[in-house]
Length: 360
Image (cartoon, rainbow, N blue to C red; front, side, top):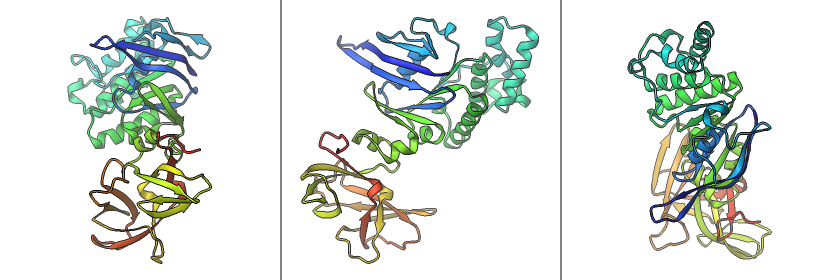
């Protein structure tokens, strides 16, 4: 089922009596049957957007539609949503079966049907052998699956997940996010997944929505957003290691960074910001490239080698920090102290104006 938000706005009043636009005139359509990741730093408005969809918060302006039905003024229990919180919110004195069954009892679903649906949901999340256990007997990932099963057993129109993996360790996060994607695909339910973890969002989402200060910055397929960020904020937020950001200039058709030519362009002469992904550098084995640096530190993990390169401490052309990272194939035997020549891959280089907007 499609979810549509039109001019959606939520305003809070701060302690000093100022208006804070947590969600600022958002227009967003979430396609039916897709898993959409709402992504951004703390305070960007992603959880507030989720709570507006759920009906836990009331918008100041705008409308929310589930398919063709406006639900803006509808209470949460009437919207047909399944909501999974960060802290699972399981009843500790109940078994897994009773936790999943509980919402059906509140809905007064006939006992036989309720038991069948509970068994079905337990099988879907892989917990059919654990129905008689209490939450304390389960791992964090298993508890999260119980919470998902409890949300799905009501047959909701929409599944909403608020930072569902943040309490898990790295291994369980990986396993559980794979389970969430599998469950979403098997049920076909429209799902909104809130997270600040870019790797998490990019790995399981059909599309991601990047937010900042209550405003949508960009929406699209995760790889497309990574490869073609619309502004410097999106470019810096996505990617690990983070994109390298330099002050630069265009001069007579040449892109100049650190007083070295790295590429050519048909853009007019101007001061610019240049973003280069760590994997956007190629080792120039001919050593003809003028873009050359002494390597400060080498970190090799698996197939990739990360080179950490310092710039002079008084060099202000590298924004944010005085070193940058380059990822190359581990087959290159590069050592600390080596002088390495690089070329830059055009598709991994992004040009922005001084306000951080994509250079037109």
